[in-house]
View 1 (cartoon, one colour):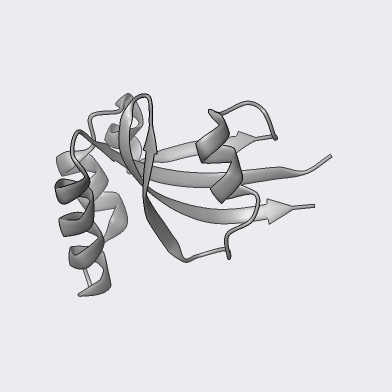
View 2 (view 1 turned 90 degrees about the vertical axis):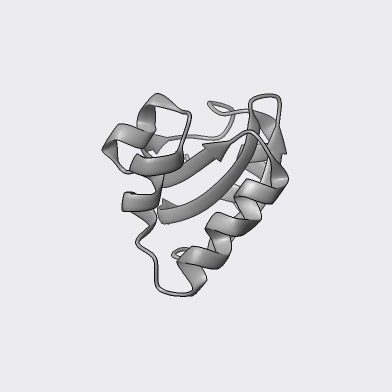
Length: 93
């Protein structure tokens, strides 16, 4: 069964998400930005979501996590919780 590890940053607006993505592209550290800006409790641990399988996260999340390249920041991804930047840190198929 497929599994993945990922980290994310959750914010309220698409604009905030775009600004954080730009900061990462300009050399900002994902984990530090997650600690500072993410509204998800995982932000305290740099956005780390640990290991999970398909169907354990919301569908929009799963679609990205189980198809995106490992190590590439994706987003904004809109879910019922807000806007996410996602980074798959590992995946097994």
